[in-house]
Image 1 (cartoon, helix red, strand yellow):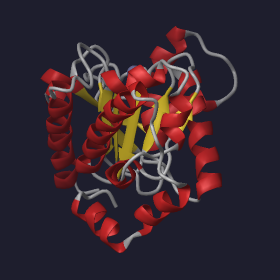
Image 2 (spheres, rainbow, N blue to C red):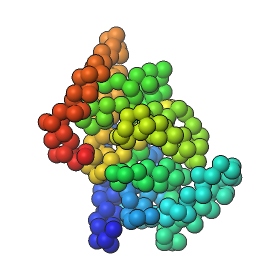
Image 3 (cartoon, rainbow, N blue to C red):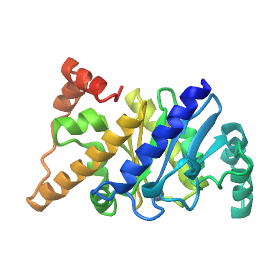
Image 4 (cartoon, rainbow, N blue to C red):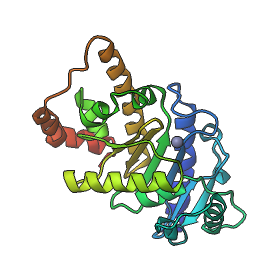
Length: 256
Ligand SMILES: [Zn+2]
């Protein structure tokens, strides 16, 4: 990646984070959530620990080397101190802040073909469903066409897991199983009792997915209070996701 493109992405990452961190919908407050983008073949930019999305600036992000983090996937268990040491060693600039403890799942997701951006948040309505017994309905079924355009036909649902390495491994398993079954990567990963991860090819795509996920969750909650939701039949969901005009809208939204 050219240095000018890397710097452009760094600026875009600051802007995306601020928009997500200050949205009226409250996708993330205080130090919640983290964002990232690829910055080179083996490098990525991720939010530093202890920073806030709402006040993000250039040095809120740390550039990391993926190969240094890769040994963390090995099955042997590691103490929090060992994990912290790896996170610190992965920094390209040793004066940069410590990468978020969730850097490992960002590293994995950004290694997938076509995935250049990641936004992880704790949106209120989405979490309302993810902390309820109906989380799997929200992941598996769709209620209206724009939900499919921005969120795909289905989402991955990851059972509650300890943050850090266990969560990164559970996300990897969930995404791999989804890809085997569906023949494509998801746009949305739902973390039970935790939050949302939007992944995609552009900053605009992950922002649109985050916005539409929260809107869908509000609609789900409203429909649930009236005895629903009534989900779209599978054939209709498939038809919307494959329609040429929907593909055009996805292009306009830079979702593809
Ligand atoms: Zn989180």
